Image 1: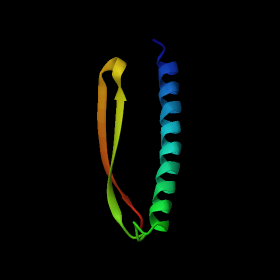
Image 2: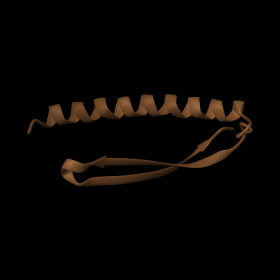
Image 3: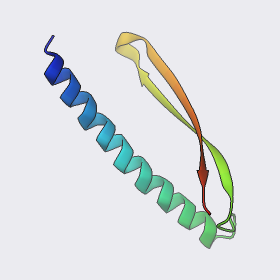
Image 4: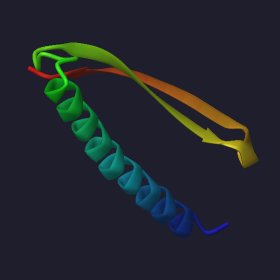
Length: 68
């Protein structure tokens, strides 16, 4: 195993996940506000799950997204 290759591929994957997740959340929040389902002042719980079946990894991360 090449530790540098592993590290770089993990970082690349996490960067992709971070950017795409942020865009998806922003789009969904804007749509919900536009449809009147959100006022734009809420805070709500969020969960992210990371799964890698080949190595039996299954992690859950909990947090909060605040709109104001």
